[in-house]
Amino acid sequence: MADKIKNAKIVFVVGGPGSGKGTQCEKIVAKYGYTHLSSGDLLRAEVASGSDRGKTLQAIMQKGELVPLDTVLDMIKDAMIAKADVSKGYLIDGYPREVKQGEEFEKKIGAPALLLYIDAKGETMVKRLMKRGETSGRADDNEETIKKRLDLYYKATEPVIAFYEQRGIVRKINSELPVDEVFAIVEKAIDELK
Ligand SMILES: Nc1ccn([C@H]2C[C@H](O)[C@@H](COP(=O)(O)OP(=O)(O)OP(=O)(O)O)O2)c(=O)n1
Ligand SMILES: Nc1nc2c(ncn2[C@@H]2O[C@H](COP(=O)(O)OP(=O)(O)O)[C@@H](O)[C@H]2O)c(=O)[nH]1
Ligand SMILES: [Mg+2]
Image (cartoon, rainbow, N blue to C red):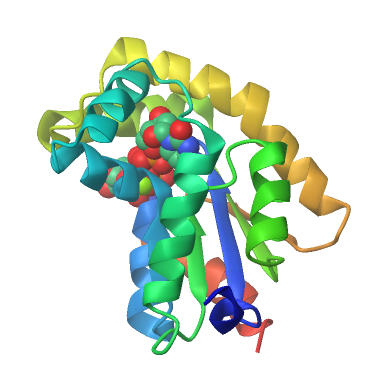
């Protein structure tokens, strides 16, 4: 089964909470027909299902912590296989969150061709998340959890970017700009892949 996705084009989309990963991914899907897999959305779907596993996940996410690596990776892999026949490429949004997650992904699935580093200032991310929290209904879009998510991002996820920079596949995207200007930079990075 996993053979089906062995040669797939894989793009990691990494950035802090509220940096604009999901927003840019939607635009990439519209223009390039890639399959968008947000690890956070997959986890939230499991929570919404009301399963026992979902209940455990909910508690972890509400604290702003990371769920066990294997749980997320299995979900991503299953979702990738389900789309293998129609996918032009995969946007893996919000993963890897730590270097170990990247290493395991490569062992079980394959290597990324590109890492889009969606970069915004800490204060920008907090502002965006507080605004999103007014309507998102997300249990983790509150001031206390946002602070923990940001701290964990700087501690665990920024090293992921350094790790892939050595491989020359990181494109840093300034997401302080308006959405369409950010996308213009994203387009260049995706076009280079062809
Ligand atoms: N690989 C992952 C992805 C997510 N999570 C957990 C911890 C996160 O705090 C929560 C929500 O993930 P999101 O990617 O949705 O959250 P972010 O805050 O990073 O980004 P966004 O603003 O896109 O929701 O799920 C995790 O443990 N491991
Ligand atoms: N000004 C501005 N706002 C953005 C941009 N990208 C996202 N936002 C806003 O920031 C919030 C978080 O964006 P989202 O895509 O959910 O970020 P993610 O957490 O990285 O997936 C959303 O409510 C967006 O409206 C951008 O490039 N510029
Ligand atoms: Mg998102």
